[in-house]
Length: 313
Ligand SMILES: [Ca+2]
Ligand SMILES: [Ca+2]
Image (cartoon, rainbow, N blue to C red; front, side, top):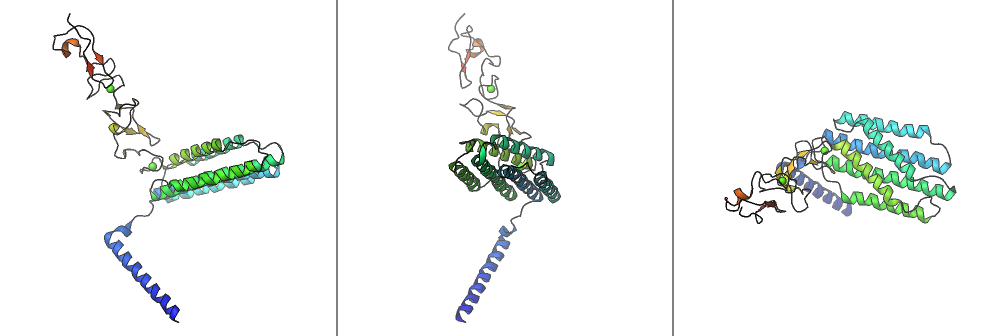
């Protein structure tokens, strides 16, 4: 009885604390933290669908390798159908970028590249090794896209730990497959890893670029430049940032610095005395007030005029 009563008291206290906290949070407005927007839900669902499809398809081929059979059209078709359904569901939740056919193509290209990187010949051991590698690869793609799906859903940067976990599991599975011996290819974890990361990056951008929010992997979104301007960014001249001009965002949600200016682009911009051979019409005469009118000006690396070669006529 005592113990039961004690538990009840604790429960009461817990409820009391929870209620007080709720009241406090509501009062301060913190509890009103918004859940995912329909757009975020949409993008998140699409990312999950792409990861699931890649993993399912690779799994269809894993079975081929394991059983020495032809790939099951039904298995592939099921993966396609699940993907199409998920995309339709996603677009019902809210509009988000990521065209079904385009993402589908990205998944299929990825699966093809993995299949050609992991051949399935050379006897039993090789078959087993390839099957394990295919499975590990599919799982990795799915896990990583899940990390991004979570991030997009919350509107937060991707959790690096989540990505690391996917890497570790993949590395371990590959090492284990190779340890067992007989693999047709060895030491290809990095290559497969790179293919997978490229695929994950592509899909992530495809699905979230254009949704109005700066998501993981994006530098900007439309007019939202994340508070950056040309002068905040490193120019092609390693010595300097850009010094002016107009920054914009391209259709891949990356900065477009085409209209940013810098010292070293050969054009004299605001704040520069010269750039390369562009002196903005200045010459020795104008630079020396007419006292040393002959000779040529030169332009220093920091875009200031050097008149030391000017001389008398
Ligand atoms: Ca975005
Ligand atoms: Ca310049």
